[in-house]
Image 1 (cartoon, rainbow, N blue to C red):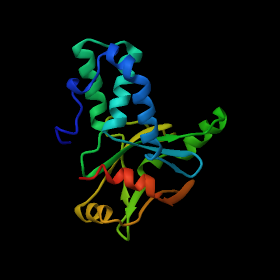
Image 2: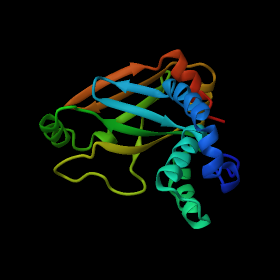
Image 3: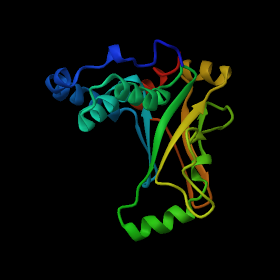
Length: 196
């Protein structure tokens, strides 16, 4: 990740400043997130992160936990900065959503390894499978987690094609959850901004 892309303490507001700016900043971020939220079928949501979404997440965590000491602020920066795209990738949070608790328990067992079978495809290129949970293992042989952190790493040809206007498809090849969709123009335009 480029140093410019990472957030530092200088980019953050104090708790007092944030309380004054929060309503406007929150509204702006929620509007921004609408273009970065991709539903893959009915139950898998991909929330594509960027510097703005992570800035908001850190400010909210500092506010909720009432963190104002330098070490605590740095801990939040260290935890969340890796979720900011590096210019040649997309990073997202994947949520597996079933409202019924019993159904969710069964589905998380059925969907073991789904996090390794989510992909992006640029134009006629090869599928780029997401690299999941680089920070820690979130699944085991019996069930997957409802939350995963993923990185789609693009090669130079895919980067060039994406920036050149090629169609982008997102999909899942899991036997129990086979889905794919072409990114809508608003989502595509927002995500292309992550690629330098």
